[in-house]
Image 1 (cartoon, helix red, strand yellow):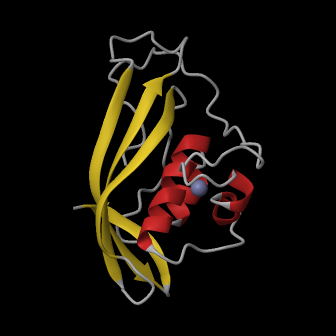
Image 2 (cartoon, rainbow, N blue to C red):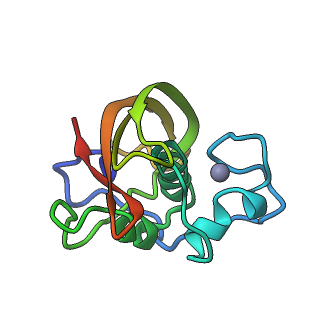
Length: 155
Ligand SMILES: [Zn+2]
């Protein structure tokens, strides 16, 4: 997934980029149906590792939703990982749909997950002419590094 809206206007005011930690009793933003504390939060805190590529994909989507750039970098393949990642605080990710997947299971070493992630631009952040909502459609590639799933790139 891309880090945020593309903007060519450096004067656009941006809200604080600080991550807003989500209450762990809230429903997880990956929409698994579980609460955040029993779903993606343990991955974000580094106390658990996703066992499948889809699980990693969902936890990375949730990291976008809660503004956890550190987790996104930590779960990026070393060969494709950007030096830094700045998330756009104006984007509110509100829906994830998994469309298809290949491999990525507990016995696999590679996998793909095709998804659609939807966002709205937060009220008060609409200073640009950018659309107020959008959808990110991507077929992501995943691989194992040292046994753990990482994001490689968009297929
Ligand atoms: Zn989750």
